[in-house]
Amino acid sequence: METTTVTAKDNYIRQSPYKMRLVLNLIRGCDVQEALNILTFTKRKAAIDINQVLESAIANASANHSLDASNLFISKAIADEGPTLKRFRPRARGRAGRINKRTSHVLIELESKTE
Image (tube, rainbow, N blue to C red):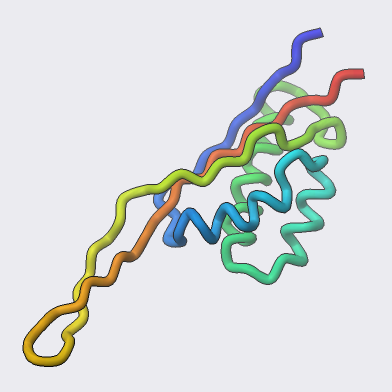
């Protein structure tokens, strides 16, 4: 039996990839329902954005591939680095300090469990 993989992606999320990976490490390899529970009770801003991507992946699985959500698990969860917004803050003696506002691209891949 072939396993079907379903993906969902969100680009240019205004949060650093490091912070996103901290939350993605919690849900990687989990069942979909368990991952939704973990994201609901995680006290990090990244959990809100990742929850949206996960729900999008579940919707893609049911709409495009007719898969049951209770039979899915997270096979891949990646946060890659997006473009960095460069800003400057005035410092002492006429200098300028650089501020990097990082963005990230999140990819979640779901697979159906084989019986």
